[in-house]
Image (cartoon, rainbow, N blue to C red; front, side):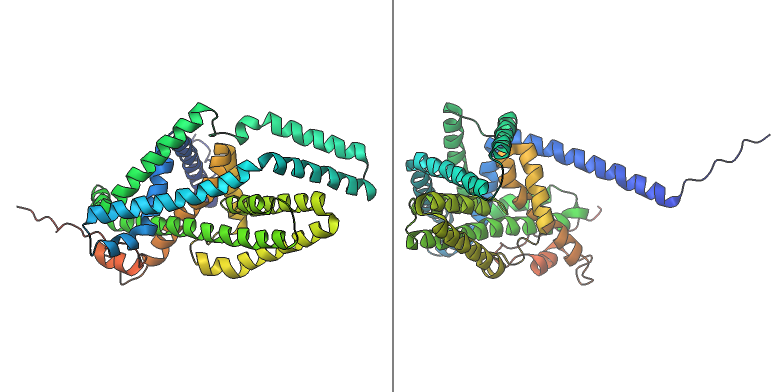
Length: 382
C-alpha cells in the first residue's frame, strides 16, 4: 500500500514563511551591527561626523584649492570650520550649564504649579502623587537603559577629547583625499555591484549631510523664534531656554516639543498662567511654521520619512542605545532609505541599465558631490 498523499502546503504560506525568516535574519543582523557600532562609538561617531562635515564643506575646499595647494586648503577649512562649530557649541552648552540649577528649580516648580491647577480642576491630589511616584520609579528602574552609551566622570572627558581630536583628523583627510578614499572603497567590491555601491553611497552621504545641515538650521530657527517670544514676554532664563530648544532640535519629533514644554513651565512659575499660555501659543506657532514652511525648503527630499517611521526609529534607537541611539537613529534610517530610493528609482531607468558607473553616477548623484568613480577598463583574456 502506498503512503497516503500529504496535503500540499499552500503556495502563499510557503512564500510568507520564506519572507518571514529572511526578515528575522535581517533584523537580527541589524541588531548585531547596531550593538557593535555602539561598542565602537569612539571611532564610529567621529568618522560619521567627519564624513558628513566633509560633504558639507567640500565646496569651500574646492574653491580654496584654486589658489592654494589641496592639503593647505583642506587644513584651512578644517581648522576654521571646527573652530567656528566648537565656539557655537561651547556658547550654547555654557549658557545652559551656568543657569542649570535655576532652570531645574523653575521646571520643578512649574510641575508643582501644574499639579495645583489640576487639583483646582477636580483631579484628586493622591492620584497625581501616585502617578508622579510611578514616573519616578520608572525612570529609576530604566536609568541604565536611558543613559546607555553615556558615561561619567573622567571617562567622559577622555572620550570627548579623543573623539574631537579624531574628528578633526578624519575631517582633514576626508577633505583632502575624499575622492581617492571613495574610489578605493568602490573598487574593492565585485564589478557586478560596483555601480550600485557607488550610487547608494553617494545617496547616503548626501542625505546624511543634508540632514545635519537642515537640522542645525531648523534648530536655530526654533531657538530664535521661541527665544524672541520669551524675551518679549519677559520670561526669565530666555537665553538658556533658547539654547535648550536648539539642542533639542537634534532629537527629531520630540526634542523641540519637550524643550518647548520646559519653556512653558518656566513661564508658568515666573509670570503666571497668562504668560505661560502666550508662550505655549508662540511655541506652537514657531514649530508649525518650521514644520510646514521652513522644513520643506531646508530639508527638501532629505528626510522623506513618515512620522510613524520616525517614532519607530527613535524608540528602537533609545532601546538599543539610550540617548545616543535615539539621536542617531533617524539620520541612519534616513540614509538607508535614501539608498533604497536611489537604487529603486534611478536604477530602473532604462537609459542606465548596463551603463558604466560614470554615466549612472552623473545622472543620480547630488550636484555638490565629487566626480563619480570611473571603472577600470574591462579585462581581456590573454
